[in-house]
Length: 99
Image 1 (cartoon, one colour):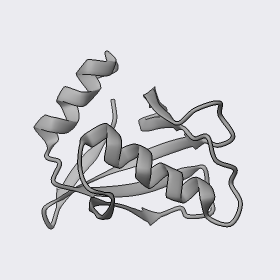
Image 2 (image 1 turned 180 degrees about the horizontal axis):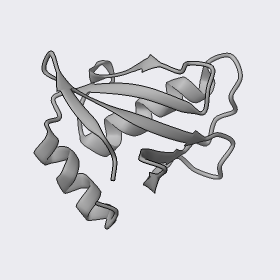
Image 3 (image 1 turned 90 degrees about the horizontal axis):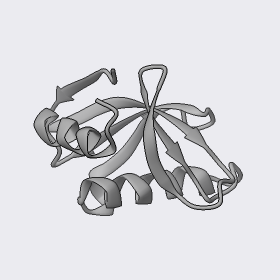
């Protein structure tokens, strides 16, 4: 189960990324974090930019609504997404059949 917390109108949760994948996609849960494959390399912030794009697309929010709160240089990150509440988060996870 992915732990998440609502804070200041944003939903914050852990993300585990896998850079250099063939395509960017949210694939499920891994060790209590949302697992995301990224088609970008982990150099010069490219993977972080791609993560923000992938999460924005997945949750249907603008790019500026998703931000990396911590873990910029790590595969394990903490992200916050505005415009997403716990119910929408869980519905998206159900669509992936991982909740």
